Length: 245
Length: 198
Image (cartoon, rainbow over all chains, first blue to last red; front, side, top):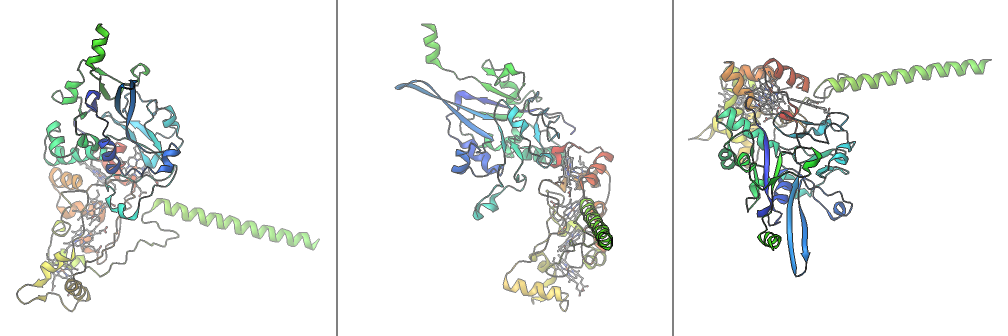
């Protein structure tokens, strides 16, 4: 890979309405098994991206807070060193990679992840016959006994590298990602522009710009995981007013 | 004691049988491990039975048709694709009077029959990497044609052998991970796992 990328995401919580469009988009892009009632009750549902909901205050003076959570693609990832077979590692483009066929299913990685974004296939995934032909051919269907998680839709990054860089000899920038539909599925689906994806190494990218925003912070920063996902704080004018009183 | 002697013989025999059985199974497993399509005890189930015989040599060597005329997307996408019935018809049918060139050959007659019934040709796959491998034709074609100056046909033969001379396409290269990675290293192509596995 000639060009030096560092993929990452910025999530502006201030804009999130909790609509779940990202969750659905991710589910269908990445051949994620259907979360049946059984799976949910067993706490084994698959959500590479999920919306956490918090209530603040008490009724009627109550506010809903939403927070999309996905693999943080940590630079210093706790999941990586505990894998006995190197099935998960950090590549030189800032991705935390899961090599499914290398995985032997120890589940150490999921237990060591503070964000709870890794999911284990306890069962062989199944789809109704009529849904089988909508599976994405660019994404491996994971079988029983394998760990999986958000990949930043690496199949689209690969496509960008082949189509934009190699075929057309152009640079991958925000514009290319957007016009060629090469952003991750969640980013494409988000109606309120909460999720922004891009290359931190490209000084003109929106993620690079937003990463200097005064509202920026990282989840569990104190753990030293150094995520490649940056959050922008909620702006709550009323709360600030109260602070000033 | 005769009983204990016959017991020994039985024991020795069963030991021999067990050892040779285990040996055979191990041998079979090793064969299966090292070769694609999986061949056990030298028996290759990978010989694919196609719906009709399609002779590459007639088209490639005699008629001089380029590989990427039929395998149209080979330089533009992941899959090379196998041509649909319509492409056979486009060449073989003489439009004004609807006759077929090469009639008399059972394959061409079959093509005509399917065409008239409006049914597709169901080619069987010969090469297939496991589902957890994402292979792309395009970068290979681009690299070897544009940067190394090879002819299309020469590029294909790096991985598929001389298909132009095969009356029945079969897989000649293993196309195991070792083959991919060896060539990638030789040509300074990436070997990061996530290039091929996702």
